[in-house]
Structures are given as structure tokens and as C-alpha cells.
Length: 130
Image (cartoon, rainbow, N blue to C red; front, side, top):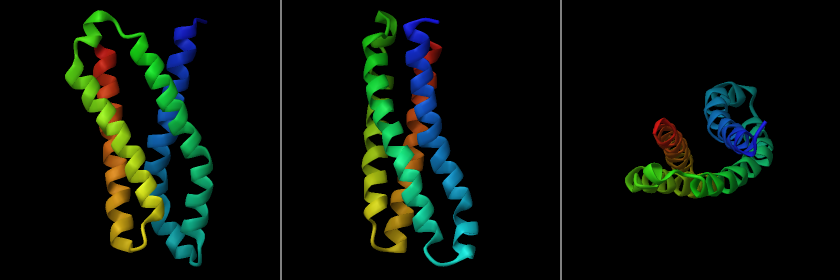
């Protein structure tokens, strides 16, 4: 087991929680609404307790990953910039989603959070291919 393995494992684990958790939660929303009351809000609040620490791990390991890029990978500034923009957008959109005061704003910010998280994931895969 190398330090690189640990770094990549932590990054993938955090991405699984951040991205996969959002997609899972989105799929559960109709059932949670059917349960009535504050079920969706309670589940979302509980998810935040693991999602935001996972996002922090993503930022830390992402910086670490960037420090370990090869010269060829560092030359792919467009992909790196796209990933960084998507990551920041995902965090900002998630923050706005938590504070949305209308159903429409909640839906827009939630969709933007998920789409930007998926874009960051895709850019990570593209970087990993090189």
C-alpha cells in the first residue's frame, strides 16, 4: 500500500459520497415526500453531516492530486480548469440549495449541484486517463 493509493482511495470515497449521495437522495425525494411532514428536510439534514466533510476531503485530496500530476497532465490546463470550476460550482450550488426558500430555487440549485458534481467527476476520469 502506497501513499498514492491512500490519496486516490480517499478522493474516490469522498466523490462517491458527494456525487453518489446526491443522486441517491434525488431518487429518494418522491418517497420521502410521500412519507409527509419534514421527512425530506430531515433526511437532507442528515446527509449534510456526511456530504460536507466528504466535500472537504475532495478539496484536500484534489489539491494533493494536483500536486502529484505529471508534466503531461499539468499541460492539460483546460481539463484541470474545467474540473476546478465544476467543483467550486458544485459546492456553491449545494450551499445555495440548502438555503433556497422556494421550490423552484431548490430545484434549480439542486440540479446545478448534481450536474456540476457529475461534470467534475467526468473531468477527473479524463485526467486519470492521461
